[in-house]
Length: 431
Ligand code: PMP
Image (cartoon, rainbow, N blue to C red; front, side, top):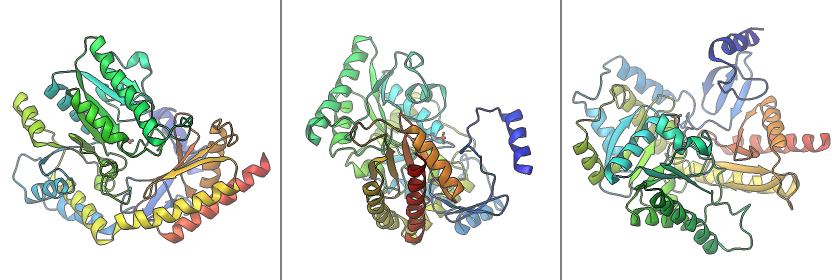
């Protein structure tokens, strides 16, 4: 059993806590489009991986990487056409006309740089983030990633606000009242820094509140939050690492969906379709101030010609294959079908989504809304056994997370929905 042997060797060398999906981990050897193939040749529909944004091993991205890698790969300390063209093309996707680009190699690194910018340019250290957030793994970023660090490890320079949650915490309030209440939490956090003698630097917010469980953010919430942050002298950082590059369908970036104009934006995951690349995009005055205060920002591998060729090919494919439009059309279809399933399966407490990003919240019963993490675990494992890959998120781990590569088609959507329907029916008969 080569996969069992590989699993044991992995445990021995990487440790048992290096995360793996599923009770019966998958040994994937090949990917193509929305499909993944295991070592026995079995085919899985990938309804989870957003890194392979334009599809696994997209030939145009592979070709761009190969061509550039066989021509030249250096750091950004030399002039190179592709680096500048790609940065210009990225900057042009933002509503603000004055965005500048700084390349990084991972989302964590981008958020680390964004925090430094906010802190050094504001002269403060206090940063607000949300409960159950994930922004990355560096020392500073893990302090604002409340999912990783318990309150005692976050330090005085970080304050956590509750996640706006219309499903669990509406309590008879309309959207406006809900927004008011959750904005009060932002105000309290800002005042709290002052009380602690910490100057306020800003706030980092994942523009889809992805790890937080993808709540349906009421209109105006993010915009109000950003205004509050700026009024208090801080910078608003939109973390687009997970949801960017058209995933939400109606807009290229999640913050644009929310009608907010961030000071600093961070990108990563889907940017190179698996090639490790990330970036900080920030207003010119911030970048200029930051670079005046630091002799230089240099990052050996970031923004190299191969990365930029990969990034450029990703942008070409998104445009040429109309993938943002597909995210909207197929996404709307999936959402309607998921709502249909909710009518048939009482374990589904709530369905949320936008573009090709969905959350299906499982509960013991719809009245009490008591989270059902065991059901969620059983569903994702049964889905895997039935050939469809999804995962779960949220503070209670009870939310099915569905976030497929962008070329996901209607046929793929039907397979996803039929399989989920079958799995939920089976599990309900098993009690
Ligand atoms: N921000 C968000 C919202 C993320 O989802 C992630 C990765 N899950 C990161 C930052 C960190 O990115 P990376 O793993 O590339 O460091």
